[in-house]
Image 1 (cartoon, helix red, strand yellow):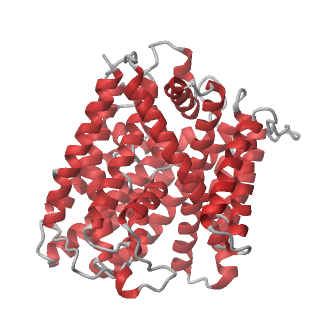
Image 2 (cartoon, one colour):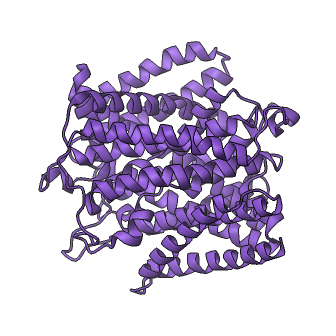
Length: 539
């Protein structure tokens, strides 16, 4: 089968979903370009700033499209085959994920740009609000744990890990320098872009001859050292001013996202490759993992992600200039992430059964696949592979930046800690869990060391999907109260609740640390669910 036909078919379905179901949603939510938005009414020049739809789409897309839509599809494709994974990506993105993101965005715009957590307070109860805050905080900790350890794993990879570590470090330094040039030296954005983008390319090229390899210090492995360094970066990124690191880093990272996506997709469509990996590997993987429900929590970002609702209602809603832009940004942004997931899955579809590459980590499979696609443009394959690996790390930085800062906000809201020291303490407490978990040496049945991200990935996906289900439940209560079609969010919420609670139940079969956390997540979710049902009965 032609890989071109599969990828093109998926893209066509995404397009039809946007012009079909996306248009219906816009009509059902009664979007109006003449109704003032919080960004235009408040427009304080700080948080509430109206932005044109193309610019806001790019910012929103770079915030939500991290490593999740790459790792999840690759793992699910390897475990269950590419066909069920592709079906879930396409159907999930159109009818669940994009509905979740779009409705989160619109509901926030209609509530003065307030976050989904505040909507829980208004439409459910004070108790549900506190429980939801706690659930969000735990979910964000899992995001930090999974992605920080995934980054350190890519840094210690034997062949290209040292070069990626060097280029990643130089990339962050360049971002800080760019922030200083923009906000202290007052250099125009066009000039700084013209200077720093080539410097990032030079850093990628030069890093191949200057790999950064950390030594083993006593019994401390290099990956543990990288874990500490990455968590220290998360700490700094959480409390540092936005202008000196996060804004310029996100701006530069956006170029990686677009170039990688465009080059990989064009190379895929024009390459003439054939699908070699099996379409279906059975209802249970070789690792003993059942397709139901684990497919639906392994592929979180790329099909449906609760993290997107926090972004949609936290920052994006404060920049919507016209309500009609919600369809482009919210619904369209999720479908673009679906394209990223399809591209990631295509890197698995290239592999033949039994190929040693199927045993590699997701970042390696992704980088090899992307370099294969772009070499048709005459790009050196080693440079393309390094670029793809840095782009992968850059996607993770996007998530780590936002997740750590959001977790700090949530914990400060829960505890009432104020000021700089409140932020420092909240950040330290947030990072303590990932630090402890990543310091454990985890081994499989054969005695081989297993990365922490791989152990915790399913639980990370489950918490993320459960967050999406609870968000959709909250939106369902709001839609029912405002006499709008509420089944459009209730049905996706019900499906995600079944799959995520089923997955958490499987985690309870063996009582250990993961089972205890799964039990806590399940308890919080069931309590919020009870509050939501009471609110629905009252409407």
